[in-house]
Image (cartoon, rainbow, N blue to C red; front, top):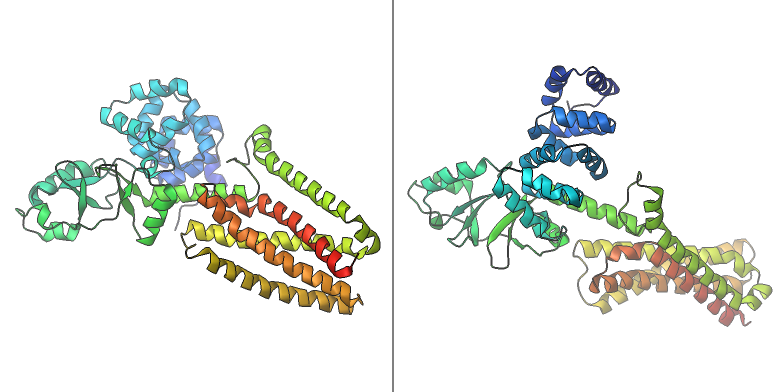
Length: 449
């Protein structure tokens, strides 16, 4: 059965902390998986969580720390000395250690690095910090197993044993030349079945998928997903093997990107958490609310321009929310599909074909909804001219909203702007304005006022 975090367990941990039952507490938590230890820590207050981190062995707590929410981890690290932080970093893979270093206040970073005894570990961390965090270079870990093509199978096995001591999981064995340039990968089966004196150059597989250090994280995710990779090697601009991105790091990246896109689509301009300060939450949300306000004011001015129509046909006013809502809904639907397609690299082919497709879809939806409006008008005894006006306006608004929802994300993506912005208030507000304008303009033409 999976391990269960219960109220009784949390209370027992808190009691042992209060009475300083270190031996019993250490014995209890040492047998638990680090992910479960992290879940227990997240249920404690800051002082209790810090107590656990200081009590347990760094081999356990270093992994547990990486499972915690970033804000809570930062608060715990603030309660640790530079030496204690360094001890945690020494047990982490280089990519995780680099992430933690990036979270620390600038004034203690050098002090923490100075406390790390493994100079190679420090060198690797500094190298990773030089890359953009959302690229393959920023996501990769330096720990991997690599062999040279000139080695024999027997020599290769000896070297692999040494390297594997510092690698948590050996996903692949990479083959490099004398200049450390990536040449291919080595099958474990071929390694085990080949004669001991066979050179690696005779048995390795030259075909290997890889990415460059500057490859965007989304592209790394796409390649790993396409070829079902658990890890992918990373090379520099000269083709030298410098690290690997593993599936667990990629999952974390995808989760973070999904959260950012979700917030952006909801009209939140920066990454925030529910427990952030009121000021931080306000800064993230207010800009889009201001945009919505101006969009609403724009709609008011448009309606004022058709004051005569509203005086003569008061019923138009009651259908305005319907038109605005349909414009917003259709625009969000279209943009959401395109943004998803861009993320999955499925938006291909000519723009003209996509234009024809969107118009076709919009016509089907618009005609269907228009017919329903006419039926509604017949049931409620509306004049046929008025029902037709509403139906035709709805059809035109749906077509325009679908086109805006489709092509705005594509244009934003081509200009290097996150297209997720087009699934939120931006697209809704713009479609509301266009929808209301089209509604009243078509009404003016058809009802002749």
